[in-house]
Length: 139
Image (cartoon, rainbow, N blue to C red; front, side):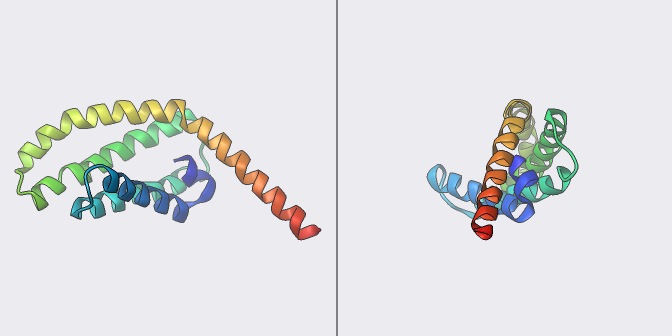
């Protein structure tokens, strides 16, 4: 979310997409689920760039975390099992409920505590880079 706010949609999409690809490569291996989850996660980064265009603060991060988590879990958790692993929709739904509850707890906590700090850090770094570029161009 903070990267989407500071750097924009393309960067946020790329960051989210490759976060999932690298995570899957290290943990569970790459598969069709990687494409679905990476596209979904990248899309949330893209969405964050629009949502946070004129917003900031921990409350907005919490709101986006709730909306994004529910959307992401619905798209990934309710499609991958039934479509690719022949799992029934009901089994996917029942299993998704406790997973999404824990996912919400973690994501909202992260959004409230860390996202504002990361935003300030990234924005400060971005200003430093711009200042250095201006000095180089003027010199």
